[in-house]
Amino acid sequence: MEHFSKKVKVDGEWFDSKKEADFYERFIKPSGKRYLRQEQFALVDKWPVGGVTMRGVFYRPDFVIYGADGREHVYDVKTSLSARGIDSAAMMRFKLFAKRYGLPVEVVVPRRHDFKMKVFGLTTNIQTQHTRVSRKGEVVNEYYDVFNNVDYDIWDVIGK
Image (tube, rainbow, N blue to C red; front, top):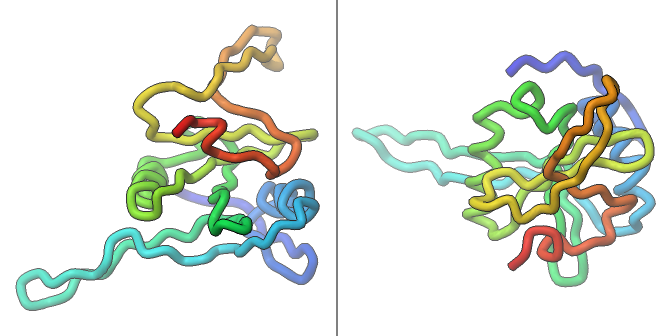
């Protein structure tokens, strides 16, 4: 997938896009929670094949929020929740991460006053469906949850 975003510097850190920097400024920073950016996680360890070693598969989420009990949220900031914003390779990384680490990747799309969030790969649509009016005036139903900050428990959203 081609990426055309420009890097943005905020608080002395470089972000991959304006949307990612915006999400940091409006939701991550004000939360006061400990976080790491672009932390690398192994999804598949390296393995031997025919006398050589295959490289492992890794994933770097945009943000990992830590609470008192450990990891609380794993965020990947995208421009859209559609196939234009998330390619099949990213979807596979999200699934492998959830399998290995037991925590789903929350894909977020920052908006003017809040953000859209969706967990992909669930077998049922347990996330509540929200109705909104599109720019063209059409009524659209979407699966996402809107929050004003990162103080929520992901298990309350997707169930246990």
